[in-house]
Length: 521
Image 1 (cartoon, rainbow, N blue to C red):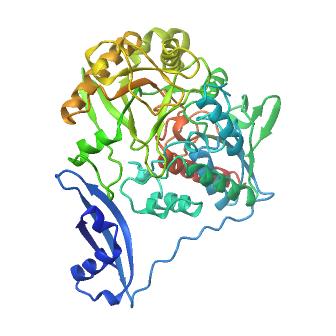
Image 2 (image 1 turned 90 degrees about the horizontal axis):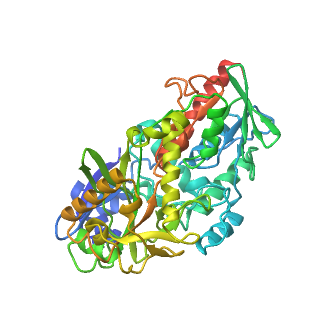
Image 3 (image 1 turned 30 degrees about the vertical axis):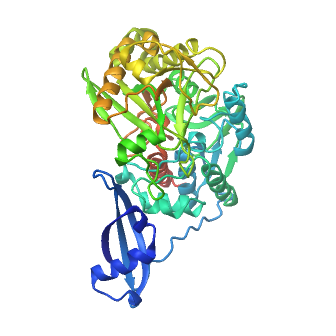
């Protein structure tokens, strides 16, 4: 058995194996020459003290011990095998497709948007304040919202499935192996498109199909069983349907609702995106004027209770930038992401507060279980009405937002389309605005310097999750009323990030296999 040792090192020492391997040998009482392999299994930063330290955990293999075998992926040919429809090519859909192939089924992945290369062109147009293609943007297209996301892989849902295998799958398709041991693994928006394209290539080379520009417009339900989906007037049939459409596919939820398929309201959160100079966050978190060569861009995680509502940071992006995440021109929606090097001059994060059913009770009479979805959309329309032209976003200095005053000017920003000064608290629903202002003020007491003229809040951060859930049986993972329909991922209300969505996709694929095996297929 390998020996495990955890060392507490300076950031510079942790980057030099010539330093830490001899130290590890001394810790476990062996000669360095006896070490056949020293493998990092975890690396984390402890910045609680004035001098940050790195906790480095190593597995040490000596010459007489068998070394760990690399993980192999062997996807069999599924040409001519039973077909399963997968709606959506985000992490849930792609990992469901990979698991179906491993089990001998042929996935037919339907993606409303375009493949990566033309999608990049459409995203560049959005950043230049050009036209917004409602089916090809930051949310839709090959890989879904995961393709041009930050690529953070931390999840609290490791019990849902094989977390390590999910990371190994990403490494197999081109991710940096460091994601296997970092405490908060991150791929980066500059690396993800190639990885997603490699996963799609694996699916098609095994005989699966990925059909771009195939927007599902309806469902075929016979009795209590879903037998296929419509793309325009074309019916595409399969032995089962995995629904993994992501959190922005409002038309899908409405189509299901109109078809009599049960959909439920669920809790969600909305707010703003906050941006600081990265040097400011570094100085607060690392207790020094400059972080130096060996420390990464600093991050934070904040939570507070204000007036009985939770306020918290979400999707914190050190060394990142804010992007326009709307899916049509009537909305103003922003998100944040970081490249792999996290080398931008800015740090940003969502700051959101919980939305309760009482907040949109006035919409329940007309919209029923979709009322939260409509409320979310109205929030985005309000932001657009207060932002000016095209993708220009409403913004306010953080100090002014907390004090309740208009910003006479705005500082430099990473948001390419541009900003316009706006009193966000004048048009954000009052209960949300009060919670956000109080929450950010409390964060300023926890992190001295957080509330500053140098930072801005930008509107709005509304796509943290979907306001609806497509209910499924906890045992079969099938819809509670419709046989053959398997809701999955963020859009169905069962995940909250790349890895948790991927794990849910795999779990649902296993449920599909059990279902079809029971039918003798």
